[in-house]
Length: 482
Image 1 (tube, rainbow, N blue to C red):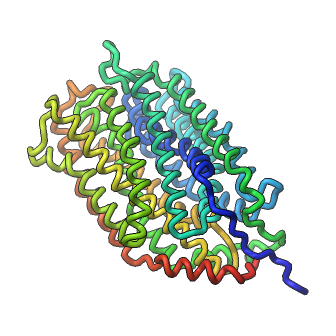
Image 2 (cartoon, helix red, strand yellow):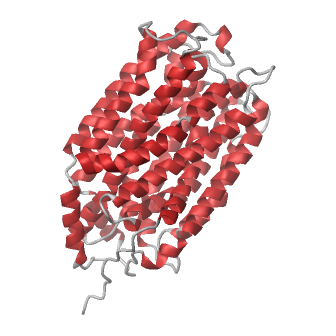
Image 3 (cartoon, helix red, strand yellow):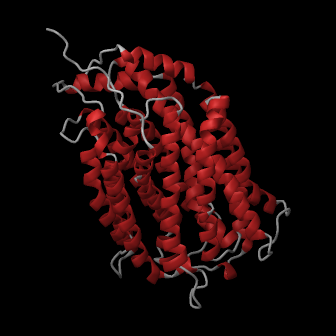
């Protein structure tokens, strides 16, 4: 029987408008991470009174469960056959549910016990993560197919990171600049319970709008995207194909590096807001300014990542940028512990932190742009070896172990806060400063060590520009097995 499997399709080169519209979708993720990553622990702990370790436990459990449904969604979208392609139906379907779930997460009923509040929090986070995965997994899987070229896909992913930063900045303005701004009653606006529900509704609207705009903006590319052949295979055959796809050296490197990095990132995400409020004793207006520095750093990162990739290759460039990020991100806290940094209240404190935020953002975002592009390069290498195009599976499976580890690590911020004796319902004025110093002495060595181990792991990644071009050339005449 003749094989009627279609040849691999390479869509025409993307225009600037499509790159921007594709990136707009990441505003949803940026806004979600900004608010949930920066404020959720603080809100449920300091405002609602749920013990920090309980909040961290809910966050950890949600990440663990989320890790397992991502590959299922990825594999499902890889095989999906509809008039709207493999990815877009799922992307459209996620917009309203994720917005509704996000809004409800910040509006728990009054009078709940600790156990009831914990349950509400856990169900709420799971709902947000599940609905968001139906957009994030297929949308991320679009990148390798939209931009097959080794360097052009770095530019496309740069737009994704750039617009994600814009989404985070808009959410931060809504939170710290409008709904949680300082008032006479609440000088630390983040501790004002009345500001959270309207903030949640506004951010939820932003999330839904960005998903719909991006999905509509890339809809016209559907005819040129890969169409898998319809076939029926057994569960055993499916599992065998999944194993063959994931049996890839460079994919293993990416997973190990990501797993180590995820632990460090979970600590950073959970504790940054505590350091801003209680270590630097900054108001919500200053928190907003620090977040808005991403609007400066992200465009620079998106601009410098592609030329650095051309100059040094993606691997060396990402390792260099990440190392610089480790130094800048942990520098201020380390210098304060050594009594070499301006005191709180000094007119120099905020300008230095803002400048450092810009530098750290450039280095960190630039590194993540290149890492995402490197993972995308594994798609064609895997397709050459297996005959199947499995972007959704590869991207979601890469996040699987990362999220498992992150799920456990998400518990760490709450445990560290409990370990140093951090009280609930406390303001910077009546907190013993020695508590934050003890926290810093634990936090910095852990995050620096983990970050350096993750950077060192990328040394074993093997796909460079020439290897990628060879993979593309091999696919020109290849007939996929699907």
